[in-house]
Length: 320
Image 1 (cartoon, rainbow, N blue to C red):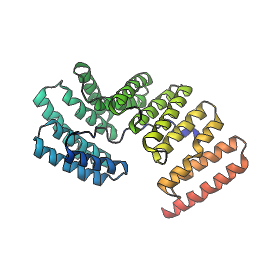
Image 2: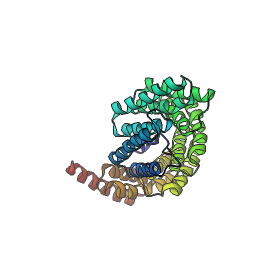
Image 3: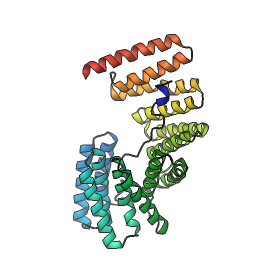
């Protein structure tokens, strides 16, 4: 089971890609159009296009509302988070720290307006594996929220979830579970219980439960995450492939090989559709399915899967 239990990145966590609300304005048609374009391009993975529209959003809010207006700050943080996802860490840090400094100067060091830039700074540091800088930013954001709760709960959810994943990585599963359970509640307040973001938080909580050896609880949560994802964005995507891989991992840890095979069986088709017929990830999952079927006594099916996986692996190596 050497490959299978590495699963499928068994404890694979997902940070929500953007990490900030897109709802900059609810009564401004021009801004709503820009936000829609940003969201559309982010969902299709077109980060450069999303960046261009986010830059326009910053310019628009600066012109209409002024440099230090809350809407302008929010637009800058949105742009910074896109920079982060593009690997433009220097540009992201400059924008975020500029927003933080401006808000501190205008409102003081414990105002709720600091929560959003602090949460984003934490996520930026986390993306660079600068965990000693990420954790203080998250904790400061949450400490401010305790004294002066933010109206927008999404940055609070992001700070709690990101800190939870950080603590889980450090082996502190007790605090991690507590934080991410709180984050799930915040996520429901911020974006509802039928959103892809909510499904992602369910996935992350399930992974922490699995680390705590609470396999039955993890399975229930992961199955719910898949149902929510289906309602929010369908099942034809890579996120569902990852969720299904995690579910298979939880079943394996619970000793349920038949259920694990069933959960993993739909993953190859998703990978092939989204990544192509010769992608190495597809070969890896087919090898995992082959090994699982062999252990279950399905020798013929295992041989067939292994043959296909080997062909894909050979083709991928030739392309490289």
